[in-house]
Image (cartoon, rainbow, N blue to C red; front, side, top):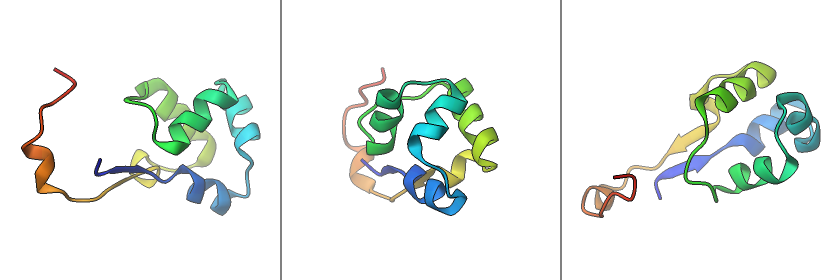
Length: 79
């Protein structure tokens, strides 16, 4: 998967703990952990917006992209 979640790097830059972020945003630590590990298939825009507001960043600072042409050849699971 060419999409990487870079939330851990942002937490370090902001000097914030994941537990604190989860509580401030209003999501469970488990949900945040799954997002941080990239084990989710999606995230609500509203949740992403809250993360960005609390961390004072943009969505592009929480996600990275590694170009991989093979992804165009694979079946799209999202329909």
